[in-house]
Image (cartoon, rainbow, N blue to C red; front, side, top):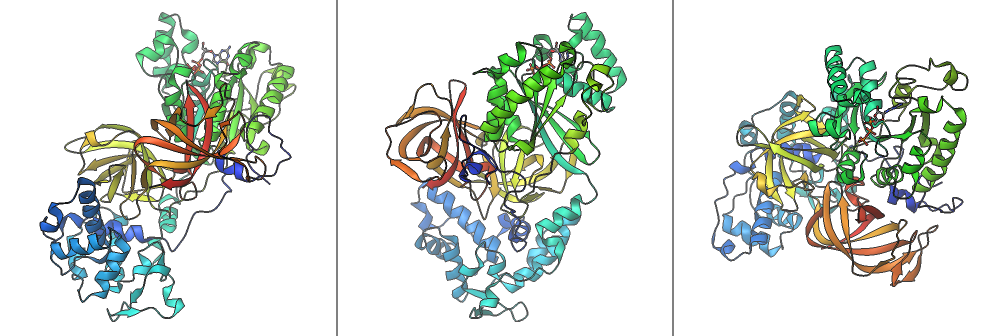
Length: 632
Ligand SMILES: Nc1nc2c(ncn2[C@@H]2O[C@H](COP(=O)(O)OP(=O)(O)OP(=O)(O)O)[C@@H](O)[C@H]2O)c(=O)[nH]1
């Protein structure tokens, strides 16, 4: 049974699972963890010393290379050194091998291993490494064992393609003829399994959940969350008193709680949220990072940035007559936000039917809003069981952290309060064993020579000292330090929203929307890709050559729909029409998208978060889809 359904007015008797892909996945979707897939821990350690290698600088074979080829060459050399250590070859010979194999690292390594070269002594590798943390130092110990073995099957993503292995004991390279030998070797110690490492690191802490608060302008999002934080004791009473006095002076006392989250002067003066406010609080079982997104349509890109970091969403709607309708009408932000978060992969939603004090806690009004939203949210792709509704008032604090006390509400509502509903969100799986990926959503100056980027780790793990790539430029960088909120960390995992201090790369060469990735298993970089999309309520059909704005995580890029490849059956996904001349609202189609400069991309099958795209035009989302092919 499909978890997420398609677009408006779709027939829900359809059973096409493909729409799950377009709208992301529920937490019970496929399980990413591959316990054998741990080589990046190994590579990470070696990468700390990769710049210290003894391969000499540029030789004549490189002199004529174009810039892009030089970059590929440098990356190949680094990766070869990280995989098999230093090689007893002149740089020129090494460069020739790489060029001969057209920068194919696997082929180069095979050739190098088949030749008579000897690896550099492994003990020297360890001596060079300064253990940064307990985790790293313990990982370093295994480097000795793993490297001695030269067991490429343990380092390369596809062990079956590795032609040779070596017995750790003998140090001899022997052909693999027993299929059993071709299996990834057992891990010497569970703590080097990223999943185990994750469990060890996080066993004592509550599950972390990122929750974005969305909704139409003035639905009361900031007030709701500000009041909840105050009730949880997260806001100092003196500070709250100050907000009360200051907001009173400006004649905006009703915004007192909103000021907890709307921190800038402009936000307070205008009475609207402009940027994504962040705050942390705890429920019985979870540590929640709250992302308060702006409701005004002018700040949709900020809202998308907030939603891109979220596991779950809280939609606030205003119960006032006319106000709910304004947000729910076509063009209203209740609609647009719900569509956007679902397109970004958020599958669990709590709906706070807010300001119920203004309609005398009317059950009829609550039911009316719930009915309308249920139908709409189902069409947008939310599973009915993944959406919960709660009546409340952000201003009076009713039903936020404890059950209702208002007699009119008590007459008909006996369900959980908002805090309990948040606590009952399921925690998403963290794909910690996949290659590291982080899409940058902010860049700022750090201390000394380094600078900081922030974003959510979509896949894998990242440790201090790691050497990573910044894509699409494919520049190398080194991780100097890591933080989650204010806390310094030695290692971070998929699902964490982190700040990374980088060195080895110029700040001006890094942009919001760039992807940080595993240097050995980088993301793809291309200007063209194919995507399976679902078209929303467009006023004008999409035609070939249509210019739109691509939203890919935090990247906002003008692109062109360069080809309409086929129109698909919404229920079965089968091709209904090849090369359609246009795509009308609610169409499902395979299209080709052309950008004017390289973008870091992933297939949806490899990384769901980086494999999703949204197409927007004139401030409205016109289509969402998943990347099915990257055209290199
Ligand atoms: N009566 C009543 N008023 C409320 C309630 N919640 C918020 N308000 C008022 O609604 C107005 C807007 O509240 P905000 O919290 O700033 O709304 P918002 O959704 O965060 O606004 P944006 O972020 O700018 O979209 C303020 O005047 C609040 O006092 C409520 O539960 N009851």
